[in-house]
Structure formats: C-alpha cells, structure tokens
Amino acid sequence: MKNIRVLVAKPGLDGHDRGAKVISRALRDAGMEVIYTGLRQTPEQIVETALQEDVDVVALSLLSGAHTHLFPRVVELLRNKGLGGILVIGGGVIPEADIPALKAVGVAEIFTPGASTAAVAEFIRNNVRQE
Image (cartoon, rainbow, N blue to C red; front, side, top):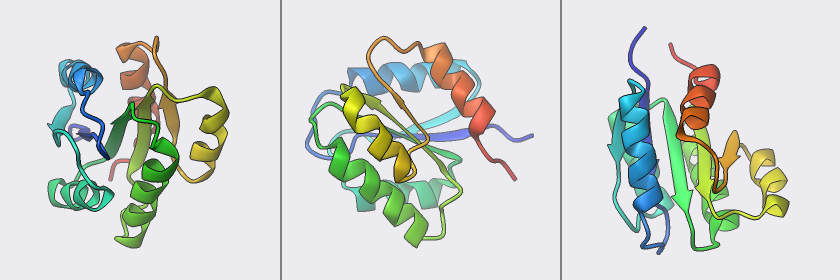
C-alpha cells in the first residue's frame, strides 16, 4: 500500500496557520506524506495543487468564518476536475450548526478545537480511498 498523500490547505484570507502546521506535522509523524500550501490560497489554487500532487486527502483549515463558502467551492472544483474521490476534511473554529451543511456538500468530517491529531489521522486512515 502506498503512503497516504495529504494536502493541507489554507483557503481564503485567513492568516493564521498554526493549526495547519500542527496537523501537517502530526500527519507526517503518523506516516503520511504531507504537502502544505501556505497561506491565502484560492479554491482554484488548492484544487490545482491537489491535481498536480496526486493527493488522496485535502485537509482544509480555516478560522476566518468563510468555511460555508470556501469548503463547498473546493469540493465542487474537485468534482469538476474528476477528483471527486479525494477525501476532503476541514478544521478550524467552525460552529456546530454549520457542520451538517458542510457534510451534505461532501466534506467528510469537520474537526473543531479540542480534536486530537490522533483522531484526525485515524479518520483519514479509516476513510481514505486508495487505488
């Protein structure tokens, strides 16, 4: 089985990436290959990087409150590029009330403050589709 490849991405204008860096390191320590996009990526840039890097997972991190717009846009663009099989997860300060709508559009799981990095790695291992 090949290593799981994860793209950790910061969509939008959010300039806080401590959580993205923490999860990047934790997933790497869990044996996954991790690519971090850096700050202020557009959904189009994220999807293009996912395509170029042939990732299995896109992990979106957002604190700005734009998750209800940006997460669905990334999922939509992935599907439009034929990458609908990529597991998309999200994390950040996301109100519980927003989570069902994000899952309905294809975000597999949302990790809010207090979630353990081990839980994120376990969720990915249990849900990623590898060929």
